[in-house]
Length: 407
Image (cartoon, rainbow, N blue to C red):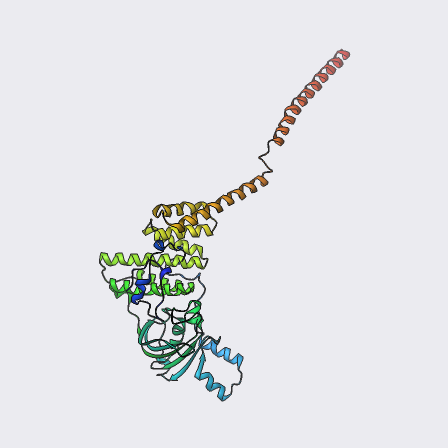
């Protein structure tokens, strides 16, 4: 179990699936200490990823059948044999699976959520072996490592040996894995499916087992985040949170409870960071708020909340939050830089709003028109009254003359 790292930004990848090697603890460091940007995803209720793009998955058998019927109406015998030997898993030619040794039949295939154990060997296109493992265990469907394995093993029969050829997109992507796997490198994986069994019941896990499992899922999220696959990263953090928040029938010690809270804080912070990368600002804000409910002085949550509000144009709300973070970490250059940018943006925003109001109100800052209007009013009203009074007086005199003449 590796728990020394504060956040995903500092993780360095090690193997195809098992992300818990001793190298992890040595390469992780706090972003606050090394001055890196705090940027790094949240869900509505720790279990809702409905706002995320869907994870790429293996097409259903009916979809494959329809696609084959559309492309080839009457395949020849040779074409049928070749199609059976080499399966285009996603239909895009980038991930193919060829059976070397048949297994026990389709009814023996593992299902998502099960823990599978495989034997595998990974080689580059030039034949260089970059990894071998006689017994590698991971949870199928959780994207615990590279997608090529996760997508193809679910299509293998028990005991089957298959040769998987994968584009770099479903392996280590543009970043590769230093020093042995170049960026965008395609891999050939020789895989044998050894066992498949149901994952352990989360309600029966001890505190240490829960912490270990949640940390492993969090580290998987770090693996995907480092490769800019923020959807898969969010998925892994969400799974880790489900482990932590699951009901339990086992009593935990205070130390175990505290460890679970710390792992939860890390997952929520990383989840907020991933949502920021995906422009899911409301989701990121919810994750930050969940952290701050338990740790009001959590600098990373404060910083990311300020970033979210700034992205939404709410500078007046973002600036006080970033100032609070800076008060906790006065020497942090990242927060200083962000505050300076926001202060300028806020000043520009206020200037634009003031100009807009002046235009809407007809330039109320000028004093000449109102003074002219006031002078006109001060002279016009008395003359009207004077004219009216004169008219009344003349009318009264005329009426008196008429009455006198009649008498």
